[in-house]
Image (tube, rainbow, N blue to C red; front, side, top):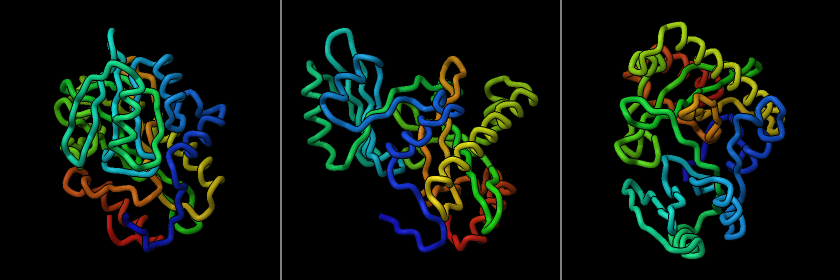
Length: 258
């Protein structure tokens, strides 16, 4: 596992981040219900939601993620192994639980599935990069839109996804420039609220990659907050201005790679 050699502390674990954010009156509406992984929790969550995600509590690049769908009879389980996606059906939830336990040795969480908005027929989410220089205020230094590969359950660039800018996304979805700008403003304000709250819980933080998603009804959700070396390298060719800004901020707290 990568170990950071620069000055920016992190909050370790997706579940504790969700707990912090869910406790905020301002932010709780954006946080999908997230619980620790067990058979009892799996039974309770699938009783509430027809689709669930099971993820490593600590992990990235879309590795080790499962998607569970409730069928008329039985269950369908999608899983990512390295860069390969597999699908199997199971008659019982116990069989699903056993399969996940066999396939993963990591500490896992269960998260309510969100039916993501789409562009060109593919689901996407939006990474907001939030940074601050030493002694400075939190600043949203840029966005990248991660569009999933065909039929993949994750949107990650490392799993074959495509990267867009916010303006490209807006144009492809037929939004006006003012509608795209309103989205950017909403994402910016929400990202700053998240960064301020989490940095009160953990001192010494200088960067966060916040993954947002709109669902099919345009409700805004926070899927994940990555404070362990969030990536922005894919922007280098796509949006050099934003990339260079992120690099300048990163260099101020000692980060030399992206």
